[in-house]
Amino acid sequence: MPVEKNKVVSFDYTLHDDQGQVLDTSQGGQPVSYLHGFGGIIPGLENAMTGKSAGDEFKAIIPPEQAYGPHNPKMVQPVPRKNFSGADKIEPGMTFNAQTPQGPRAVRVAAVTPDTVTVDANHPLAGATLHFDIKITALRDATPQEIEHGHVH
Image (cartoon, rainbow, N blue to C red; front, top):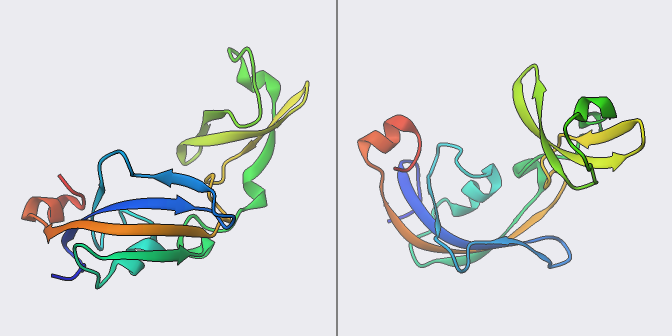
């Protein structure tokens, strides 16, 4: 049975950056499961899965445009430090939830000065080429309820 729309795909993965550093892995945990064709994983990885079968092992190199997009400098902005009242210590790398016109959004602290905190609302992997080692561990037909809801149950 090939990976195609309306199939539930379970897979193990290890994600590397361009330098080969491991960024994330499912090893030692549960495989990731998603409903193929419903946007549950990044587009480039979903495309790379199409047509594969349970037991297949492969590498996929996903460019930023098929992953989390290019890094957008407009999403990096200084914010008055007073907006962070209640936070005793603010350091680069910390994350906060910001209220935006589109609703809550996670932002990462990029820099801190006495008066401002520069936040970056880009996804942490925006602009990165992603290197995946994948093993499809299971594949099955989705249930009607999973298809109706657009995700695995």
